[in-house]
Length: 281
Image (tube, rainbow, N blue to C red; front, side, top):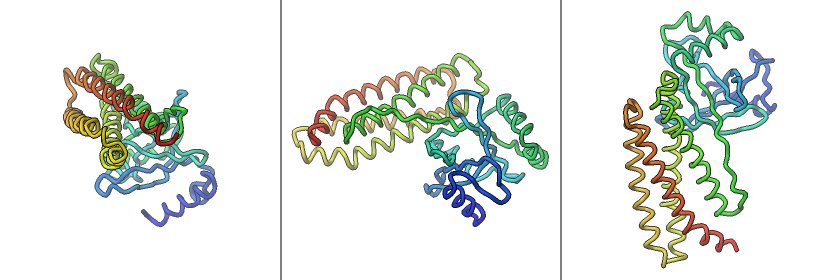
């Protein structure tokens, strides 16, 4: 991180999103991506444009001050689409989805009308400057506390993201705005797959061994669920490999995987929730 960016970030966080110097009076966000190679968080201050809908969608531009290469944060979000957004008033998680084709051009034209400097950057570089939508992922609260509540919250989030992936896959299979759906589908699918993979690894490495010690009679259940995790991981790998060219049958593949994952989550909850609630009774 440059010393200039570090200073802006510190001032932003200390003053609820307000900064001075060259950005005085400007609206900024802090975008935190995960390094595609390092795996470490990478935070940058960025200008943004609000979308016109009620979903709180924001757009950022990968101008990189007219450089001939996309900025590092853009390469990061292509590899790991889940990002953190800080506005000064709140902090939340989002899926970063670059706009494509006519949608990208229309968004960029609207941004240039408000901030002509971006048009000057585009005129001085050979690359097409990306416009990225930051699509907020909303927490799904179960209303229950303790470890059982946390499990339900995570499963609720996963179900909501899976529903979004299914929706995008169906739309693409029907040719509904396919030119603007490709990267959206890819990014949401990757975000879901990475999150599910992390959740399963956490269960296999931490929660399940602990519960098996407390309840040895459930050993067979934990081994069976662990085997399901391995099966789902293979399905995810196949899905991710197909993302570059979804093609015919991709939507059906998503539907099949969705049914398997939702049935898996249901089985986990049926067995684990009584045990987890008893631990805290």
